[in-house]
Length: 216
Image 1 (cartoon, rainbow, N blue to C red):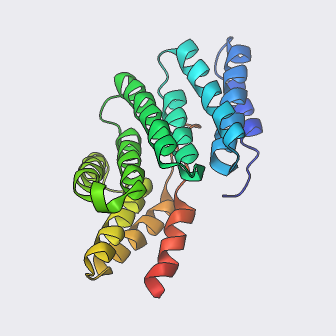
Image 2 (image 1 turned 90 degrees about the vertical axis):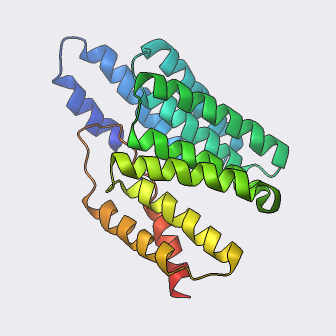
């Protein structure tokens, strides 16, 4: 993902909102800084610091779902870089807690639902042989629910494609359907727009990487 000067864009956007824009700017600055960290860092200490910040922001703001969403995403990133299986599970437990907090604020949201499925997918990858049946079912359920909310969401499509591809490989079957889903995700990434300055933007690189696998 390219590094964007997101803070300055957010600062300008918030400055026209209302007399409380100074407070909002502090919120925007904190969100932008920590979003960039969870998108780009591979450092456990930096990721943990960002996650801690999101949890503090969420506890303060109370009615905003985005801090909890990114806390959950940050915990997933921590699980990705962690080598210990037991520690991966602990991070994923924390991710689900953050996602549950986000769901209480905004129920039946495509991004939150897809992120929950991402947790199950990473949990499965820790030990596919023993966890496949349980967590593949949970992940597919979440991705299907997310796509029923918004069938054009690129992250839900990209995650569904990852799940379909992994399942097909595990059973030695064709990956054609998974690759088609992934191609659809890539198309949606080019047209995705949101009025929310903190809307999730991740996932395109994952889909582009899978496209290369589909060519092999």
